[in-house]
Amino acid sequence: MSEAAKLFNSKGARATTLADVAATLGLTKTSLYYYVKTKEDLIYQCYKATLEGVLNTLSEIEQTQSSASDRIRAYINAHFDAIRLAKEGRGHHVAALLEIASLKEKRRTEIEAGYIAMFKKLRAFIQQGIDAGEFRQVRTTTSTRALIGALDWSFYWLEPVPNDEIPALAEAAASIILSGVAAAPYTYEQMPEQKLQSPPVQPGFDRDAQNRLKQEAFFKAGTRFFNRKGFSGTSLDEIAEFLNVSKGAFYYHINSKDELLYRCYDYSLDQIEAAYAPIVERDDQGLNKVVSTCHQLFGLQLSEAGPLVRYNTITALAEEHRKPILRRTNNTNRMMRHFLEQGIEDRTIRPINTLVAENLITGALNAAMELRAWRPIDNIHDTAIEYFDTLINGLLNPQEN
Image (cartoon, rainbow, N blue to C red; front, top):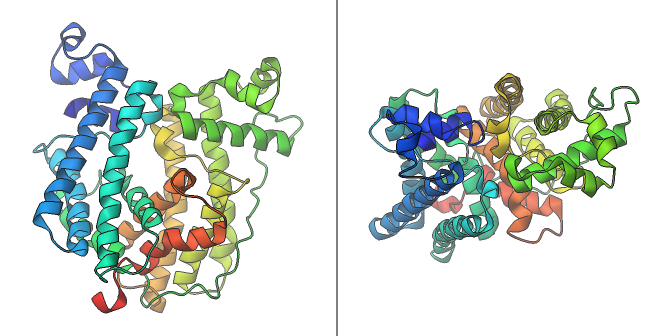
């Protein structure tokens, strides 16, 4: 399962075959069938092993660590350490839970139940800190979602990092979660409601007419389906029915599901770049730029303008599309790091590790679209404050810092 998890994380479940897994183990495909019957069976077993491992880790932390801050720190260290040990060949690769939606209902329900159990244990750690006066009065469900989202993509961005540097990055991540990035408590009194920036129309499926509304309808519907059902579970016929257009008209503009997924990523990046552009040009402190960007993109995720595409489907992109999308994504993420570096220079941000902070913040941003499934959202602006407050101000009470 370790080798399968490694392949699923790097190539994606869609591109990985049972023959690939068998080859890495020196087995024939027939021999592998003795252990698993289908690829879905293997995905399910990998995800089950991931959740069992995390739940065991959380139970061990609960028994060995007493304070809430020590428990959160131990969880983050364990998360990073598992990645390091796997890279060194001294531990099992852990499958990132990217394609739960692709599982059949019975198995999906079981994996989701394990995920909820993990979530509740982490949320209980935060509630313990609040009850003890160690943590600030945060919205526990919202802060737990931000924490999990922030760590979601650690396996990806830690891959090129030298193994001996990972423990220090884990400590840097724990410092940010507990103490935030802000140099002094950040208050939101002057934080205006964000006006969403509209991206420029880019050539897409409707190249002749350049009908913006039609393009956006395709992209938004495709993004919603891919986010909710994954690549394998999404059907172009279902999207056409959702848009109330004929299959013929839909397929006239879209050659394949692969093309639609690529265009959804392209469109999301157009929106992200449009959100960053005016903030980059603004004469403002670094911390204000970080917070403004977070709120702008959060608004895109949870308003009618969004959502942005969830990077769970990135491994479903063909390699010739995945590489430029990841390159473009990295370029937009570097703008966040530039704001963080500016904040350190103007002293609105603590002297933190900006590589870690960039990836925690952008991870939380990408996961924000799922928040509505965990809590009601009446006001996007106020919810954004609650969601990013953990990363900006940290969990700890000021006197505990």
